[in-house]
Image (cartoon, rainbow, N blue to C red; front, side, top):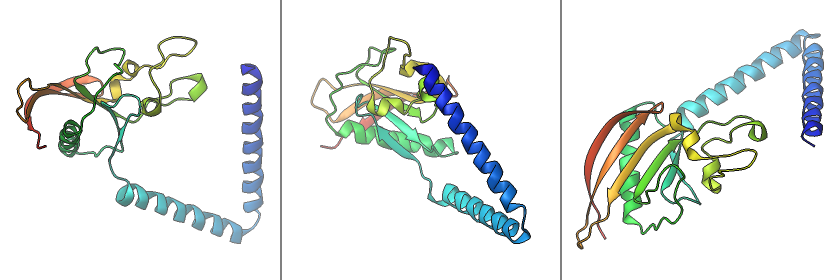
Length: 196
């Protein structure tokens, strides 16, 4: 079955390449078509660049399976802005009543909040699904293809470990571990005031 699917994909790829070849050949036959083609390609490139620079912003996507997991879409280039935004998201998370039942396979912690950059995708059925897989899906630890968050250490941004207060104070103490390309770079201790 997999072989038939691969053959079908190869056939579709060949048909697409053939159609592109015919379109390019047809376009190059007339100078006006060439000018229009370059104008359209330039306009498309300009629209993509403007969208990327002015309209793409950092976004936190909370997993529907693991409430203590956030996937960071389009993180800012400035690491200080990312750290500040993550700290605000931690405070927001702690102000809500999240009871985490599911544990990630590489950690037995439930009093922890994880932040991963969106990435790691390859061709879905042939490789890894990427960190965005865990937005809607539980870790799959067995079978032909396994998916677990521990497979993507290079996309790990922050792990925040905390301890809920035993007395009725509104303060939570925790430790933020920062990562860059899979390597631990810094640890900060924080005290977060929770207003109820």
